[in-house]
Length: 550
Image (tube, rainbow, N blue to C red; front, side):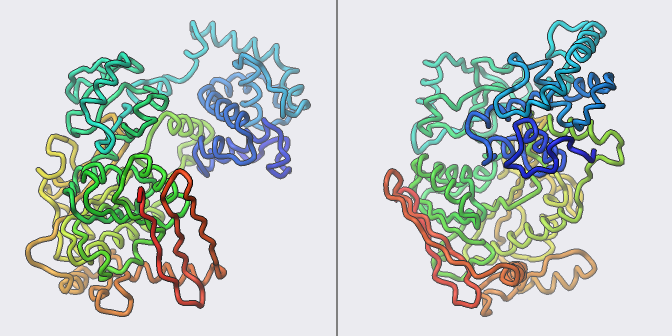
């Protein structure tokens, strides 16, 4: 689909409402963002327009197949040369919107162009209704977009820093929610969509399960951070790591902070959590979220974890690491994703045009993920490392684990009974892993009622060191590996992996000299936010951190 129709030559800020909506559809086709990011996060729209745009895009995607059928059956519409995207958007509001075509902020010429064909379009819609013998227009929506089984449950993690499980259950009872006892296999039937029921998760003791579609954002428990809305799969890494109260922990890629606050809850605010993220905006989100959750032991730093010196005495007592690095996000599924995927599949009608997995990107992500794990293993006292992705791709999961095991002899996989033993779905016996090793890995899929997720846990063996890393790499010549300096901790590189160094050289060559002003807000939140930026041609200033809840 080449043309966007009328308005395609204008700057985005000059476009009218439906023209902007068409641009959003185009961006979705090219997977340049999510529905929410392109609508709610659209800086060109005011608050009311964001809500209207979000609703229009979602509803148009739901009815895209039937709208296409109706428009294609009316050749006269094509003579308007609106382009397929505008045809769908305008036809949706003309046929299905209670208020009809939007006037405010719209182009009157576009409205007139589609309105000229109102009679023929409505006649075709009525014909479809009769042919399919439907009672409601919602029945025109493809079944796979209505399928409740495709929805994940709504999960709520109880924040034990703010409340207790008993108090949360008491509040839910007062709010007319009924607790039901249900096994994992019976959860679908026990918790029908939007019923005022919930169950205690059978695998994670601090997690509650609600029916798909349950709205909890307005509940007082959420407003007071007594519950954290967090997918079950995302709660598994902290349960696998299980840092005890008083321990020192690093959360290497921490933002937006749900896993960070989960560890603080498990540690009862005793000990220390060093949270790193190189994106300041995301780190600000972490600071706000964890402060609201009453976390008192988090030191948040804007920095690339690969540039943190393992020999820095600041982290000399760190024994636990939670690694959730950037990934493809292929496991994150919800109804919005299904709408976009269905629309793209309709647009790309031939199989050969359908988007394929970007193998080159997966390989690049896998190299980065492996580098993060191997860098974490260089911290002298670390004895337990949780590695997780929200990906379903073997390249980012089992293959990364196999590469890490091949590249060093200090760490091995934690036994299966330490990784949610009641959970049945395990890793794939591929990528050079044995059946026993695969059983030590955890996978979740949407059919389990969660997002797609992967979790592994590495534990330090009684013997073994990174001295054997070079030998292992030589033995594995001919296989893909990530260059890791086995003696990095003894060199002037201050423990940085070669991967991190190459990234630094590339960035300094491309980016101009930067300076930053730090603004500290002391009003409601006591958190101080400080940026750590590499200065071209200058000695990098000492990194500063923010203590959450101090």
